[in-house]
Image (tube, rainbow, N blue to C red; front, side, top):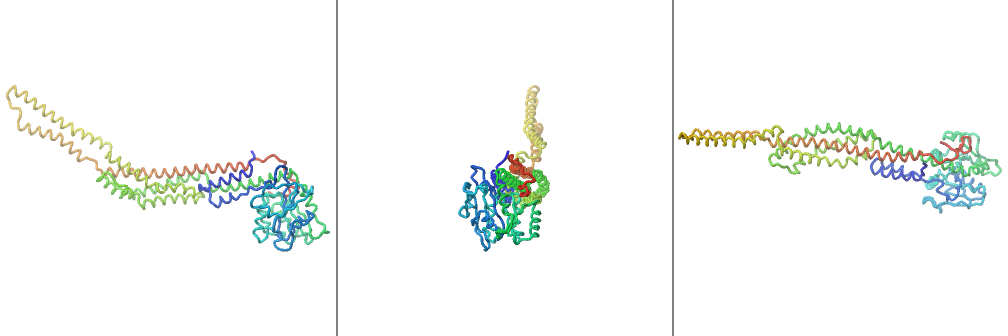
Length: 528
């Protein structure tokens, strides 16, 4: 499936907005993606019919671009002169039958000098003379850059004196793959062969194996030159097939550039393996921090346990004293160390900071909730299981043994009374009363004494519960950060998958068109 370039640009810009909002790329990278140009040559032309070839003269001041266009038109349609800059506006020369689409806001019609003609030989060509690119007037350079995306063929005009113009040369190197190029060394009546050879060598460095260079001398009407060859070359290129080939190549070059931009962005996003390593880093770091915190908690826990033992409940303010500024500082240091480690490994720290921000203040609540729950459970069931079972048995004995003793004494009283009625003996005496009282008293006193002496210490129970709560809280804090990193990995996978989908769309095949032959004239005008 072939994806429209403008749709790819729109999807990329939407992706950039989401990525920067989530912190995966920075504003600078996002601006580079948002600045991607979706303009193409076909966006200027009403496509009700096959569009013409759009050809533009580009070059520095005084090289004769406007003179070439005037010579082609056979009349003065582009302003010429000796002032710098010579060309200050865009001049368009087109057939009357060619209708332009509505131009973008940055290319207003009122700033374009237009001329129409009825020459059928040039019906399929729109000629444009652009302002001098090397002008000190920045507005001229802006106009050239605004028009470049709409050009099929750029005619790079130089003169023997100005063929090494640096500004236009940098533009050629930047725009080389998006256009077809022809070269004109104008004012050849003042030129020398060594200059021509040097210019050709310069183009070879830029990637043109066999550049097409025309030597013209518009200032000397009788001087033999190659202007007619230039006009003929453009005429032969103005075919529907060539236009489609250039459109396809231009679009693919833009897609390739878009793809490379997204690939560079994905380097900032990182990969799942790098973020998984963050979890391992955090666990090791938090284990060390946890040991330090447990040592620091020792004294505050003892104070808090003593308060629980006396009041059975601690206020939230007293609980908050457990997670004080010192503890928060150690926790913040551990999080900052994680962020620095991520930054050192080239990961998107902005996204990580966003996930960790909400957890910076959550740790105190986790510590409060877990210690409060653990100490309540500890106070509700003080001591260990065997201890509680033994005390439960003693409480049973505290009730059953006195009842058993009293039952035994009562039985003895009843039995003595029964036998005394037969032999008329006294059955109660001081010794029996004393011994019976001691027996009943000891059966109750011994379990009572054991229960009182072996009663669990509430302070110890509270301290044990608090320590248990601290340990659980530290584990939960560690898990919260790990879960945040896992969530970050999921977000990274989603944002990377969106970018990779656009990249795959950029790599999709183009519509089937006639391949540009390597030995053709058009192939000599292209550079990879």
